[in-house]
Length: 423
Image 1 (cartoon, rainbow, N blue to C red):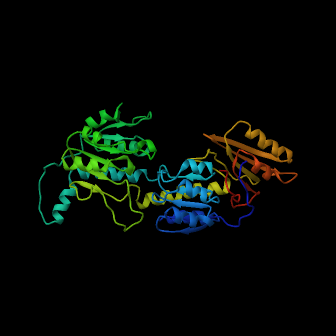
Image 2 (cartoon, rainbow, N blue to C red; image 1 turned 60 degrees about the vertical axis):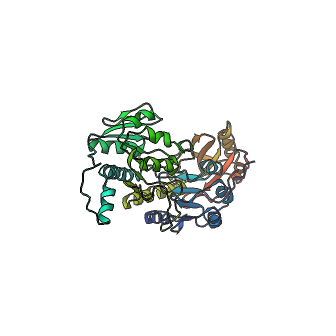
Image 3 (cartoon, helix red, strand yellow; image 1 turned 30 degrees about the vertical axis):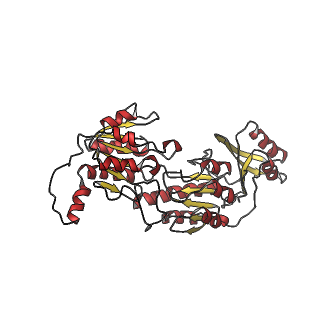
């Protein structure tokens, strides 16, 4: 039997925002009547479970891990907003099965990452880090040795999504030739050329940059064999995910001189908060630029992300809209001024008919109804202006297929009060 439940009229929804989420997000949520508590750092699993006991909304960036155990231990959690592009820090399957909506910011910091990549491509090709270090050490090393223009050189982009494709345009404007590799069919922008194999890209590129997502299949994709296939003297960038690259192999190919430089912004293991000690086999290498996962960390990007994710969370609680949720069926909804029942359910035949039979048995006057499905989940939202008898919600909760049920009375601003989702 489904264990979805409704606890009527929770007075105020509460949100916990971790990891220095931009103040714009706080303002948007508070304006929607949501209480907000902020903390600067990440929380480990035990701390997160303990702290979330009295919150329905969680906002994080890249460090806090929302595991299955967390989701199972906090049944009152309704939504997670990750104020970043990636969502691999969240167990999305567990979130879906527990009826927890997840929202991210897939576009907001694209430009920031692209600009950092362009800056690092130029810096590595001109060996600026080496020249800078020499002067700081008091050595006047005026030479053109190993220094090149990027104009006329070939950039190889692995992953041609939002970031990779925009980088392609800017690199071409710098006079670079662009080739890209992606497992999905992607439209080439400008004069960029798609290659059929990763090997073909590695053999022609003077600079290789990775812009893939956090799916498990990308783990360990770039190993010693890949570095060995790159052109002698080429440079390498990773501004995507730390677990994609074997950093020990990267170190070996830098030390051997096969690669002339590298820029890395993400690491297999990263400190939890600002000021913590950082260790990596890449530290201390010539012409290697290391940055602390700041690809999307510009003031402009963080403000844009704060607005984007907070508005998605706000809309989810005020209207039940799931537009651009990364794990739930997507419905774009507006206020209608009537009561609204949102039912997240297992996607099996007959659910909609059973739901409408419950409404019919209770004399419900249905004003509108929308249904969307996504994999194993279905999401049906029904606007009802009147019912002749109470008790429909108990029957909906008792259905075997129910994952999460939420109810909002007509004109009521706070979101339907939450209850534990189905396991």
